[in-house]
Amino acid sequence: VQLQASGGGLVQPGGSLRLSCAASGFTTDYYVIGWFRQAPGKEREAISCINNNGASTYYADSVKGRFTISRDSAEKMVYLQMRTLKPEDTAVYCCAAGHSVTFWGRLSDYRYWGKGTQVTVSS
Image (cartoon, rainbow, N blue to C red; front, side):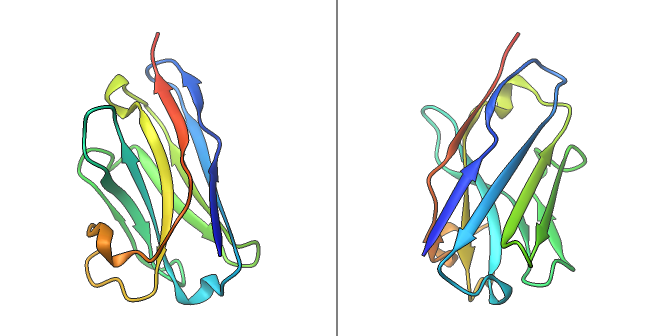
């Protein structure tokens, strides 16, 4: 089982990035996929989630209206389109998969975790 986030980088405030999460080794159709981030000195936080068929999405208030999550089940990919980025979005972003997620924002509900990708928003 593997999850790998990619697409991070350095971007100016107001800019955009698209993160990708590639899944392998399990049947992703049965899993909820979430995006999380951890800024220096802060706890990891859930920022977005998409259910197994892509019909339902969830966002933290801090990113609502700026970030969009989507998934391509055939390719086992989940994307996070990030727009209007702010310096406070700077963090390591990672994705995770959960089969029995009862609350999307609860980290312990996710079973598989991938390594993260660094996003730095700075001028």
